[in-house]
Image (cartoon, rainbow, N blue to C red):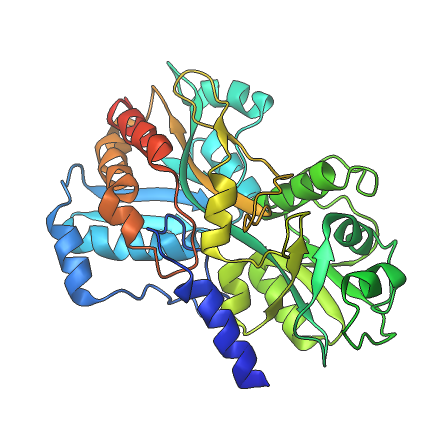
Length: 374
């Protein structure tokens, strides 16, 4: 049974990827998931145009740590005079460091808020912070329930579970969605992020949009639901779910696959429940619209999609930089590095890591915007 689960999860995360992945979510349990063949890395590195030098500092989203590991390895093999130092401190902390002028750019799973854009003008002397969508992928709802390896839930049920309104696994609402499952009367242990997180922001945006009558909290990076237990980072969520029978949590897909955790299928109103895979997340991201103004490329995701095979709990990680007024000592290196990450090779490098592609029409705009950073 364990072997079947492993095969199923790996097939979902890797075998379903028939398109170029754009976002690699960091797998818990190992910080070294760079992967990739040496020949592929060498070919990609040979195309990189190296500019600038020194230590390029950045921090933020832990969801893109694995992507950064891959990109950094390839970029530094070509551009040895530049050292990329990316710290996965979480989206909230990354934005704060950027706004304090401590980093060249930040990674965030949520676009800048208006008040953050206003603050960025103090750092970006002649401009402001802008959002550059770079990587995307599914947020999996992970669970550990002995004897149940094929669980279906919908937005309303998830909202009630994470807001402590449904507290037992054999609740009638869960039974209705899983008539053939042997659901125990075990208490549900719901784990949420204790740190401010773009993953939490996107997960609660989904709950708020798809189940507004059951999730009345405003989406935020900080957890607002009632009850439950906090855990630090997506790795903390995955570890706690793995260790506790009867538990449930949310984390980027590769944290689930990296820890051999089962994932919930979503009843979205489509003909069949939808599994958390990169390919299914791609179908949901395809519905996204650019809503940012000027050079800002913030996206609006459709969390209520009912398209067949579209998995709606997704996030897009942005690289946040100044459109104008970037620090002179790091500008050239930053543009060179981001140009590579947004390139066809940079995006392809992540396709085996459980990430969904940024649509061509959007990533093309990202490349143009990076070229114009000053």
